[in-house]
Length: 134
Image 1 (tube, rainbow, N blue to C red):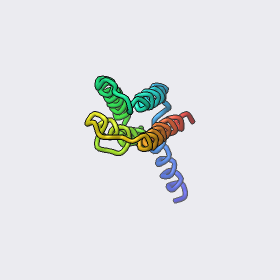
Image 2 (image 1 turned 180 degrees about the vertical axis):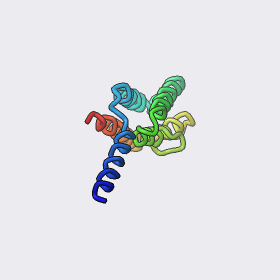
Image 3 (image 1 turned 120 degrees about the vertical axis):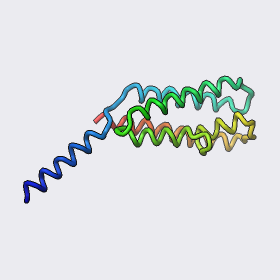
Image 4 (image 1 turned 135 degrees about the vertical axis):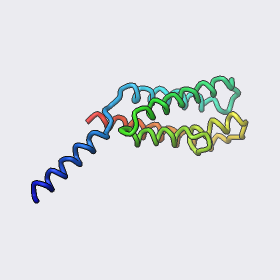
C-alpha cells in the first residue's frame, strides 16, 4: 500500500513537471521590448501621434499573445496574463489603446495611473517567465 501511495505521488509530480514550460528567452525579451514600446507610446498620449503607431503596437502585442498561446498547456499562466494585459475591452493596455483609438479623453493623472498598472502587468509577465529559469 505504501509503495502504491509513493508511486502515485511520484507520477503526479512527473505529470505536473511536464506541464511546466521551460524558460523561453524570446518570450522574456518580447515582454521587455513591448513594455518599453508601450510605455514610450503612452508617454506621447497627450500629444497627437499617428494612428499607425498604435495599430503597429497592437499587432505586436497580438503576435506575443499568439506566441504564448502556442506554448499551451504548459505556459497557461503567462498566456492568461498576456490576455488580461491586451484585452481590447479590458482595463489595461488593450483597453487603453482602444480608448486612445476612439479619442477618449485622458487626464495626466489617469495616464500616470494607467502607466503604473500596465508596467505592473508587464512586470508580472516577466516575473512569471523569469520564474521558469529554475
